[in-house]
Length: 369
Ligand SMILES: Cc1cc2nc3c(=O)[nH]c(=O)nc-3n(C[C@H](O)[C@H](O)[C@H](O)COP(=O)(O)OP(=O)(O)OC[C@H]3O[C@@H](n4cnc5c(N)ncnc54)[C@H](O)[C@@H]3O)c2cc1C
Image (cartoon, rainbow, N blue to C red; front, side):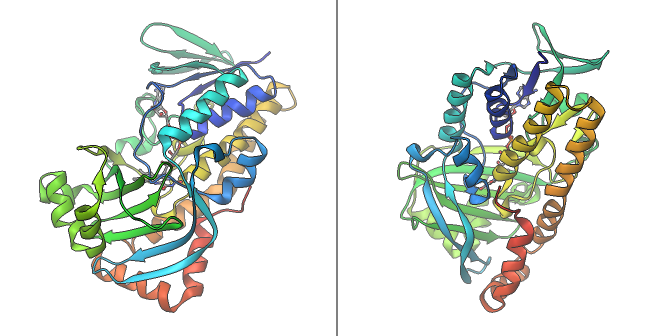
């Protein structure tokens, strides 16, 4: 039987493993960290993914996610606009969601190696060899689900890794009285901050900021006071919330550049194939969707219905058809954010020209799957 190796234990990797092992394909999954762990993420999952999650038995209902149906946008100056969300979503911490999926994957028979970083992947004579610092593994197929940025991107010499990216991401869990069904997106000079309830009475605060804002303000507390604090809603949040940890989780070099869905015969899924700007709120749904697409095609390859070149062609084609346009729209819409005048315009547009906001939402989201 052909063997599949999956690099990365985020949503894309875990769900690919679950779907393939359900069909009897032997899968090994490598994750460099140890579960459970926190990630920088707004933790709002678009309901685009709901039918799939429910039909695959992967909707984490027993973890009590919050159900989100309404959207609030505020400008840097604090003007507000609200609108109902067409399909909405749910709020759940990645700490809980990913750990839940890990347990399903293990029960399904995926061979999981935690604390195991893949340093190098080679493809020769129709076989992949994956190397950790201590040993190597062979596989017939590799799914690259290693997220937005990995040492493997350097090894594979992917073009985006050579460009510096101007964004950082910061996340906290807090206790505050944020309305249960609401996702809020607050602008500040040089960035935006999402607020959404997750499980167990916690609220996620997660923001994306241009690195130059941090450089100007010198450090994170000063940036939160001077830059985020210019938006009165964020000022009030930081004043009233109870922070669950003293220091936030921070990531650097968040890149929205285009990538190839197949590189050196590795099938990329989730952020490794392309990352949508977080304001769209559906990077996780896309990671889940790409796992569904890639696992179905890999299944066909494993049962010898299609050749490797047909697999790669079909996956690239399906990936581009499903996701390329919304990544592009997401990059364009992001220009309306993080700037005083533009964010006021975006709020005014959402308040007074409701169809425009609807069009933007439809173009940054896909069909439910
Ligand atoms: C600031 C910010 C806010 C966001 N907010 C939202 C939101 O509210 N809603 C939403 O839907 N999306 C949001 N996103 C996007 C979302 O987080 C991603 O799209 C999603 O996590 C992608 O999942 P993934 O499985 O592709 O990657 P990840 O979840 O990043 O998983 C990749 C895994 O690969 C592992 N790995 C990397 N290299 C190796 C290696 N060499 N060997 C072994 N393991 C490796 C990593 O440790 C990691 O666990 C946000 C992103 C950012 C930056």
